[in-house]
Length: 205
Image 1 (cartoon, rainbow, N blue to C red):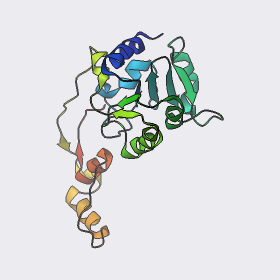
Image 2 (image 1 turned 30 degrees about the horizontal axis):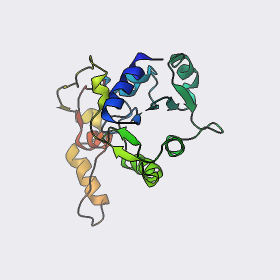
Image 3 (image 1 turned 90 degrees about the vertical axis):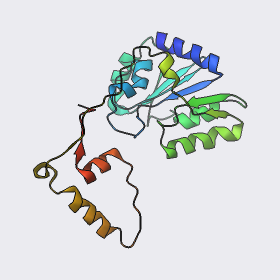
Image 4 (image 1 turned 180 degrees about the vertical axis):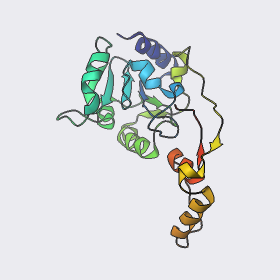
């Protein structure tokens, strides 16, 4: 049994949490999170870029896709974590397993800023109707990951137009032309914001 999972369960017990979800994403749903945000990797020992960990009182599961099946089998060996091969016949999704396993008045916890709205909605739709309670506040991994890296803070700069292709003003103007009478556009994806504004940094190498 992996010690990080044992330690996490102790925190879960103290907090009254019966199941904990740890995804691979950061608060911006970035494809490549910083070292600070790699909670799932720390807890499970699985180093692939895509995967979701579920820790329950007696069981633990990790979902990943076909790119990582062999790697995950190797890295999860003797960890007490069951590999869930996404897309394989008979392998339930996270929400399906939660619906099957969780019982009335049990508590499901996760850091709400790390799951997309659509993911959270699907999960909640499956378990809340069974009387399962949701705790979506703090990241309890902090209490296990005592030497967690600091968040990076690198200097923001403007990418030269010769690399960006167009100025930010030109891109924004073209976007406005395509809005076709709409008054407001909310841009929330970091990659879209970086493209539109030509702003860059080195938080992720």
